[in-house]
Image (tube, rainbow, N blue to C red; front, side, top):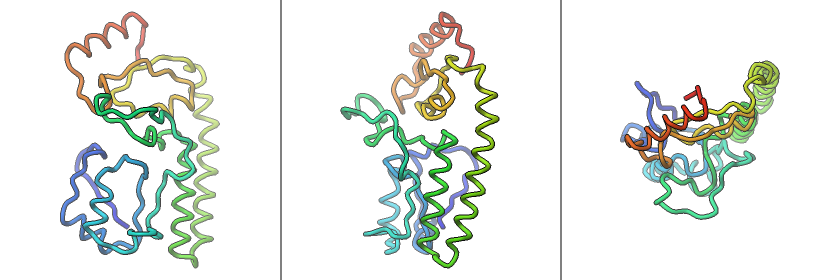
Length: 201
């Protein structure tokens, strides 16, 4: 399993795999990834590693996005619109219920790799899913008073969780996804927050 620990937060879009990463993937038994076009470095890394388990049919490569209902699938794609994702918004794991789908994909993928342990993986998934469902009752109750509340985000990462709990994204600090905010746009956002009484950034 290829896991990478970072000493500080990194943008997953722009990871630069190192020779050490290539070696880890070359030796790995399983490669779990977010799917879609979030990790643009993924295929070059797999090609460089040349691990036959992850090439071709990719039987030992687990895509956690399988079965996710994707939001914001673009009708047209232009680099002028910033960091556009061809398959839809890839930040799906921020909806807690999508976490259950992610966990199920991992459980099924690991069972495919190690059939003898399938029951163990499935039991862990069922336990996780139960805990998510229990937490959702609490989270839904806690956020209910804020349903319809407006907020500003930095990057277009949050539509899954805001849709789940009924929050409203009014604008982003990035004028377009992946484009750093300039002073003019920040002033516009500040004015919008004042005019619409938006208190959450």
